Length: 106
Image 1 (cartoon, rainbow, N blue to C red):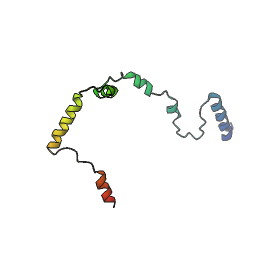
Image 2: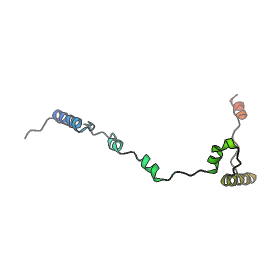
Image 3: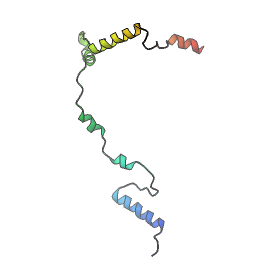
Image 4: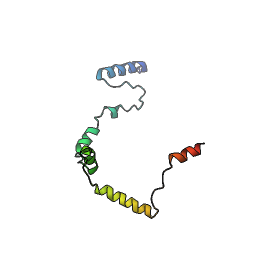
């Protein structure tokens, strides 16, 4: 039995791809078409988790025009903790100022 020429098989493969609307890839190069054809996962993941409720900071921003006083306990605790850490000398170092950066360039 005689072997079918490669050119004829490639033509057959090209026609198959046109008919079944798949990608013609005679060399078998990895192109990621399998992944790109899949449904997007983002919307279903976003629906899985409930929407976030309002936080004190978002409420303060929303009602800023009414000039209401809001108390964010978590933020106050965080600032209090940072003040204690800085008083003991354990805080983050100060950032370089704009003046010192200009002086070094000259």
